[in-house]
Length: 202
Image 1 (cartoon, rainbow, N blue to C red):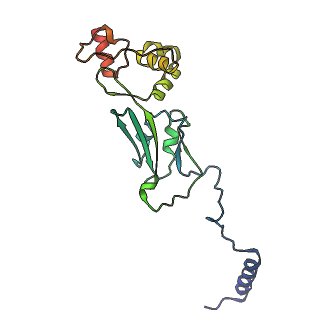
Image 2 (cartoon, rainbow, N blue to C red):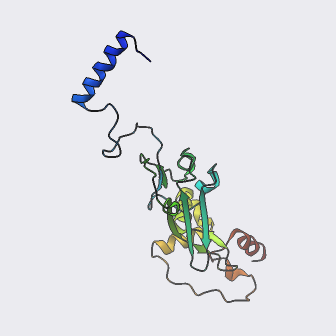
Image 3 (tube, helix red, strand yellow):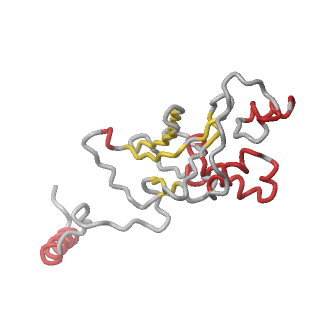
């Protein structure tokens, strides 16, 4: 197809300009490209900001963030797959600490193996001293205690976790197996179900 004269001149001018000044396209990936200020890139966990509550996993619309508890190892693993993530920013918006997970400006999600497209964070678990159920992570419990302030003293689980973290409490004897619920269970780290039973019977 033959171009009109004015377009021929324009194409020739752009070709000569590119010949001396280089191409118009950005040199990525050879040089990094800085995205816009509010760009939502790859979400990333922050070790200090994350308390391991799992709120991000509950809110994720793509069901991309998984929380796996291992009571035997007393470990909680929260993992996120970049190959399923839709970069909506819901995880960052629902984070209770507002700094546990952040949308970064990184966008180069190129992997040769899909198993490499995973980021995760591990947190210690606290278990109920009576039934062994998961109570939460120490960081989460301490965050709740800080939010409650003096009201945290009304809950032995919050109080004991905070005191142990501050090294104000020594090792307590383990609860005997088969022991009936009683007043001796009041000052113990318990799950909500066991706490209710202890309060009713003690």
